[in-house]
Image 1 (cartoon, rainbow, N blue to C red):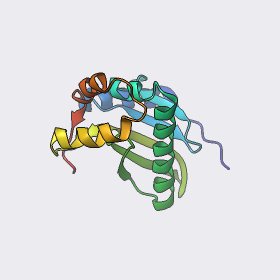
Image 2 (image 1 turned 180 degrees about the vertical axis):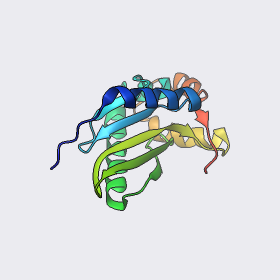
Image 3 (image 1 turned 135 degrees about the vertical axis):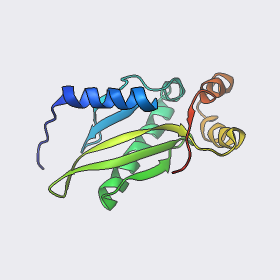
Image 4 (image 1 turned 30 degrees about the vertical axis):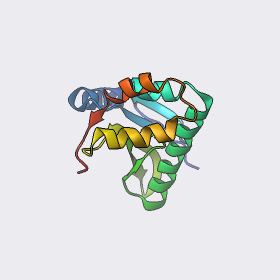
Length: 148
């Protein structure tokens, strides 16, 4: 396997500019799925709440791994819903036809009814989230995007 190195400072500036313009956290992951760089470094409160439990963290990691596998297999950007019902996007970064890393962003809701989306989220998280009222408050602050 080829070892990949990154010029992190120019990439960090680019990711931070993307975040400032869109409000979307963006991350670069190596081929093993390990975060190389995230801007901003801290997840949205909603995701931090879910990942505060071992089960929530496990489910998030499984979703990320599935996104990496799909992007690797297809060689194309893939959009999917995580276990908590949020939209996630994973794009393979290639060099000479070989995937060398992944670009990910997400933690988004779509334009459907927030109540519909909350019900999907609640159903997926109630088994391991102890404070659903606080989770709902964090959910209500997530960005909404059009499917395109």
